[in-house]
Image 1 (cartoon, rainbow, N blue to C red):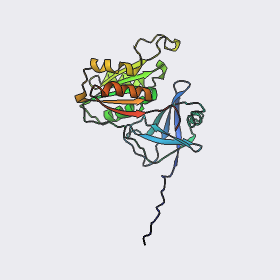
Image 2 (cartoon, rainbow, N blue to C red):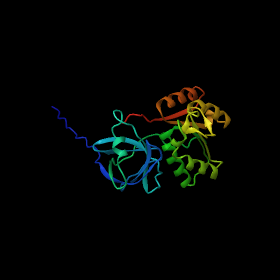
Image 3 (cartoon, one colour):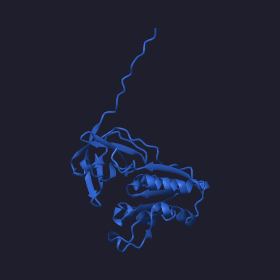
Image 4 (tube, rainbow, N blue to C red):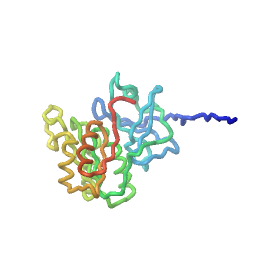
Length: 251
């Protein structure tokens, strides 16, 4: 006769952490900085799980591991699809959210190839910012990061100034191209940069930059439709494509 012992599965305890600062970019896009819990570690590109009033969702971390605080870039998803972001939207400096003690995710920097092509839509740029900040902080060399970032409107490029500055300071290491998909609409008046959906220009820029599958990894992060199109275009050409999906609905 055998006896089976039931093991109780214990979920990691939640911790409370304070919102240190908030910056709004548009009516539905904002950044918050959270106090990093003691002992909280992560790799650039990973995500943390935060919550409010019992509702939780995973968010990729903008900040690099060396930074003191946790920086998150959030898009408001109104009800009925959105459950957590409307709660977060009403929070201010000094309020608290819950956070799970461990970061997760496999959408991280793979140094095996010298050329790294990052493709993003709006909040999908987040893991790339973390990767590049840590790479520069560590004084690493030997890689070139090409960032293609798409949005409907130019004011959705929350990290364009940072990327433009880094590209100017490190032209042999960082190349940045933002593109808008609705150039004829009034909010984009005066835009003089690239136009079109980011997935529709990825092949053009890969050719312009003389990238080849043998020495390039392609990363796609953001809208699922963009990711699927980038995969269809680039995998068929022999590229290694990594993906991270950001769904509109709160999970």
